[in-house]
Every structure is written in C-alpha cells, then in structure tokens.
Image (cartoon, rainbow, N blue to C red):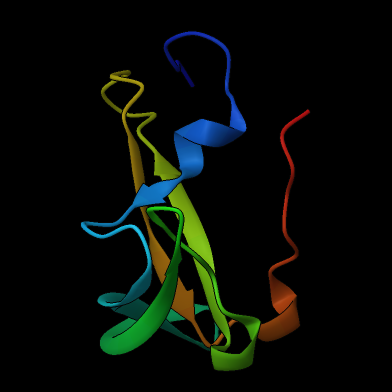
Length: 91
C-alpha cells in the first residue's frame, strides 16, 4: 500500500459544511460481514468535524486505495458493526 507521506490522524477527519450542529450522512449497513445497503443518519458536528456515534452504532471507516497505488483515502461511516470493529489509533 502506498500512501503519500506519513499516516496521521488528521487524514481521517471527515469535514462538515458547518462548524457545529448536525448533518445527515449516508452510512453503509454491515450485516453478516457484508455491506448490504445504505442508511441516512443525523450525526453531530463538533468544530467542523463529523463525529462517530456509538449510541447509533455508527463508526467511521477508511478505505485506502491499494490497487492503483494512488494513496487516496476514502472516508465514510458504517452502521451495524457494533463491537466487532474496535477503534484503531495511529501513533
């Protein structure tokens, strides 16, 4: 996998069009280890960043392009994974 520069936590922030409040996001649904459909959720925005929401079982997910070696990182949300997805922290 090729990512431009060092991987940093700020690379995984999802910016919102507002500073504070709520926005609608589309989340992929996780069922039996397969992403099957999308759902729309209202999520909190804090200091311009869209946040995960454990109460809604909504987690952030990142997909890093490894096929074309572009280093692009796609960010989004996944719902329904529960405790199967433990948060990872970049040191």
